[in-house]
Length: 151
Image 1: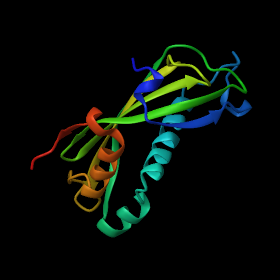
Image 2: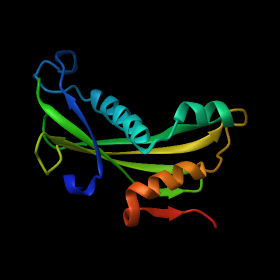
Image 3: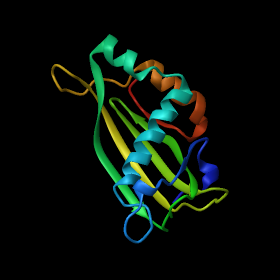
Image 4: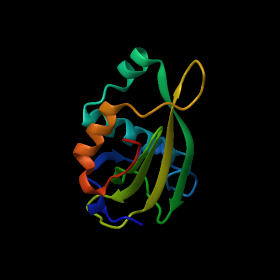
């Protein structure tokens, strides 16, 4: 379980009424939407043009694993942020570690992991993570990043 300080990037949110369940807390499926939105903002923060890369190469990432560990509820109208970090890049895969933190809190309300595999959209076979993306992530994550790539 990572503390807030482990994340160099976080995206802010506020719980909307449509996201809560009958108990007045965020319905579980919305956590995956928060994670997806925060990852999109992480890539934007890096300066990586995801859509242009897909159009240029014909390669795109597939989500192959997503986990959520619910630690404490998030309630209607609460402000929170989702921390995103990439602790490991494989030859064709990225691991995103995620943490949801109440505004000003250091301990997570939820944690998660998303694993993406880059694939050629014609063959549906894995292909290397783009070098440009690797370098952008390295620039943000620094020594916290494990590279498991040849060469």
